[in-house]
Image (cartoon, rainbow, N blue to C red; front, side, top):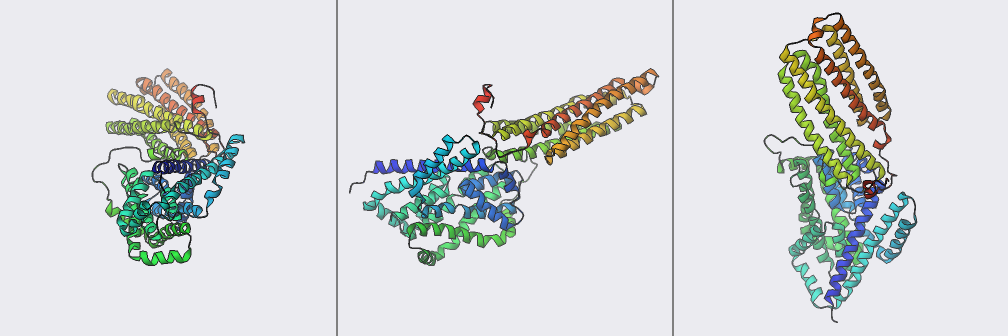
Length: 560
């Protein structure tokens, strides 16, 4: 029988394309359904190693790729959202979760792939609610994934009758290291261990390879899936690099431990099932469960070992955002959470600047002015980086609540930057003038400024707490209290003018500085009120039921 290699090649490429595309849109649909809950799940997975193992499995089923899960974990660890020890259990769980696809293939779901695609497409095109369209997207992706496998299976059938190809595959058993190397490189190139395992299963089902060769190919595929995480961690923090190295060490150690027992392992698999599909699926599942069983009890010790393998860098670190991670931009629910954490850091710096105002004027200390300027430099860096991060996020396909939250966070960042500028440009200038002119406030005037300053600091702290806790009622209270500060500012002006009229000497020499300073405090309170208005607005409360926005329509002014 003449094998038409070009037909087989085109069929394999097309089937692979459908497989990967199906996995992508199914993962996107599941992430949209999960919405903002995804980050909460990932953040709460760290209570103990067993819950981490479970959540890692579930999240990987969601992404249909342990590689994708590990890349996200690299980003979260780099952003210090979760620690190294907490992440290790999740990695072990993610490796178990990725075996679910193999078990589904063994069930021969490929036979109903077309009906599943049809049902998914019908839901997408005829459903008016975005929620149901997402379910349709998941079904369609699921069907396309197995349709791709079905196409590849059918185009592989002629290879059984070709004397060259089966012989080449048989040689894989004789050269296990070569088999593992080829499988590892292939898995790395397609960025999906599930897809690689699916192809190995198809070759087994078509009797192109025996179980012995399949075991080595699966070992290689498991190693290859860790390479993507290694690449994504380059240039990242040491914690993130440790996560990537951990995944590689898990896989390599598992393979090294299993190699001496391939013979007994092969006999065990043959006893469990005679079906080539189930045999390959069971190898993949048992291998990853075995790795979890071996490493899970020793996670604390393994974490310490990783800290030695990948030590901290020596020398002073350049100041930069701690939580922003570009690799997570395509996962908006997580990216928005990280941006919020970075904004809280930015807010802390702005709060430090605001609190230092009283000490600067009271002590006439130039070193305090220099410290404020240094803090403002950090505020500028965080403002610029966070704004760029959120702007990049706006270019992603966001749900309506995600879009509105992103815009709200951008507004908050802008107001915090304005507060920093008021202090750095206006307040420090006034302090410098006071120090140079050797003028002092009257006792009454300074008491009034101190009270107003404390009110403004309390207002900022309350607004900060409302953001951290998503407390809209507290934010509404901030808005009301700011009105009282406006009244207070007007009253303090009247009191100051009264002192001028009665000839208070200190009030005359410090009049301009006094009035400008209470005005600066008022402006800080106004920007704090603006922030509170964003928090009180429901736009900052994430919802999983929002529709996807047409960003082109928004840009052209046509609305949502």
